[in-house]
Length: 305
Image 1 (cartoon, rainbow, N blue to C red):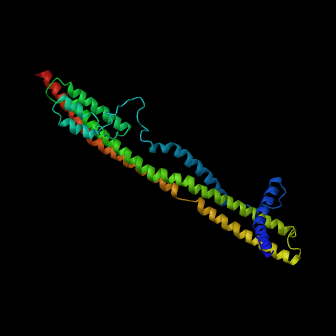
Image 2 (image 1 turned 135 degrees about the horizontal axis):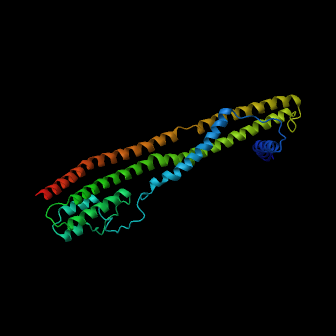
Image 3 (image 1 turned 120 degrees about the vertical axis):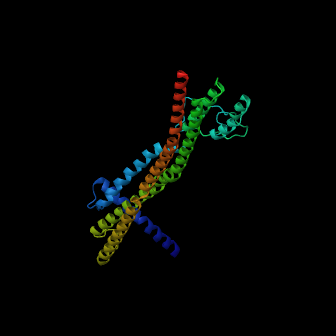
């Protein structure tokens, strides 16, 4: 019998706060609540910020999630075969340089059976098209000398492959440092923030319910008036302490520096890629310019001779 009574007390103790909050909530919805504790202004502003932060994360992730898709800038109008994607540009150039016949040159462009397909990025596609054009010009060069355009296209192909590899490195860095961080903030930190906000609201309802019971003379509590006053005061104080604690905890959860740190990582990855691309193309530019000058000089000499 004692165990049954103890169980009943525990059940009542756990049910009473929920019932009190529910009753207080219904009163507020019906406009019958005499008092409603106001949330701190700084907490309300922080709630608005979290709502905005959630939208910002969702919108930016919709766009930047493309960094996880290797072919996000791959031209949809081109068709490349398995042989086209079978070797890297560097491998093809090396094999072509040692080819002694058209058959060997063609074999250099053909993928081995166990080849892993090369990346489908815009830069890699440009590289493959440039090398194919270079080889076509070389095969159809009527003179014994080098074709300046073929030479330039080969060098351009090598450079574009390097740019493509730099882009893939950028994408990997963004996935690890930005996308992972922002996804964690959206799916974990903001979820904790939502839970913290619910706890604050529950604590506020509990506080206002305790105030209402104390203000109503303690109806439904111990009929001893002196005990009512002390018990009511204790309930209000306890509820106030819980409300303050939940509010402070929520503020700590909602205010996080991670999004800004992740954004800095995104910018750093983009900057590193563009810097690398600039360095590669800056090195190539003068070489192609030199080939152009040589071609112009050769044309001028052929006209004057």
